[in-house]
Amino acid sequence: MTKTLLADGDYGFNMNVYYLLEDYYQLWEARGITYSTDPPLLRLIITGDSPMFYLHVTTDADGVKQYMLVDGYLRDSEQGDQWLRVDGNYPLGHYELRASLQTTYDAIVHIEFQAPH
Image (tube, rainbow, N blue to C red; front, side):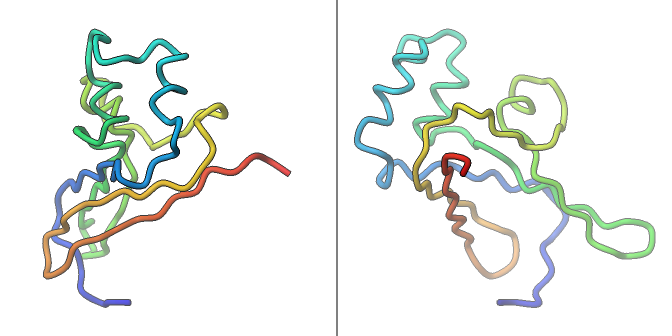
């Protein structure tokens, strides 16, 4: 744990493809996302070449840090900053996303999508 404040800015978190499910790409191909998908933004996200989400950091007028997880697809497709959301049919499993943050450390986020109980 750290008390170091992040600098204001946007930090993109990319999928670490080395820890994906064995059939991860086949699941996406079944949904029509392939290496020839046009536009390629979704393909770039699922292959770890474009951020899945951004950590948007700002400081308000009182000096309090504000944080927002911004949907990477919507931002990079010029639909503005909208909260990250994950649809209910995202492939279940454990994912690792990485980003470099502007202080003195890198961040790794582990996310696990599980079926509802």
